[in-house]
Image (cartoon, rainbow over all chains, first blue to last red; front, side):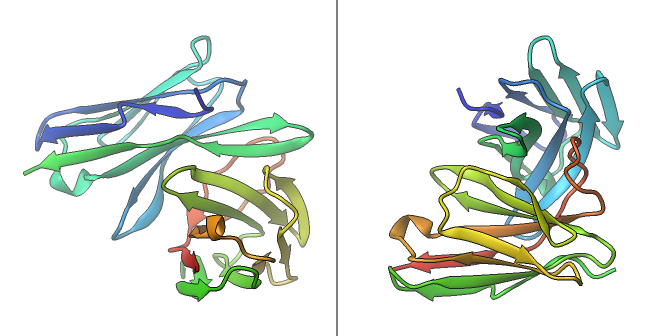
Length: 113
Length: 116
């Protein structure tokens, strides 16, 4: 699998339900970020979690990070139709002397009103 | 504060030509990164500039190059265009450089490049 691979690829839920997306990565990271992309607003930063943190909250968003499993999850509670978008995780890691940013393949979330 | 702006928004070029894309970061941001987004490969990191110096780079051929000016504006150039270069090119700015920790990035709307 690729660095920063999201699961599931697509998710469809009813408004009000919770949505959980997972991200797995392969190499050691400094931190991990989640982004949202939709046609209306482009790519928007949601939350950053550092490698020494295990959980972080921002509004209806909850992110966890398990460095031993090299995985992260994004939970959106009480989803709204406006949450419909693609969600990406991004990691940064050192590779060949450079700091390389890698985005995952993304999870397409559809929230049905 | 004005957001990240990219010009042009849409571009159609012919295979073999070269193209220059422009990015103006958020005022005060000195780091500018470039990404290529395609349906097949997803979002891929091209390079990052900070204070007119390329600080980090991804795995793209030398046909892809960039530069940053003293006012932090950045340009990306692709020479000898190939059909596979058709993509959305995104620029992102940050108040910090890639010194080992990736900070929050603010993305522009992108330039949609189509190579025919």
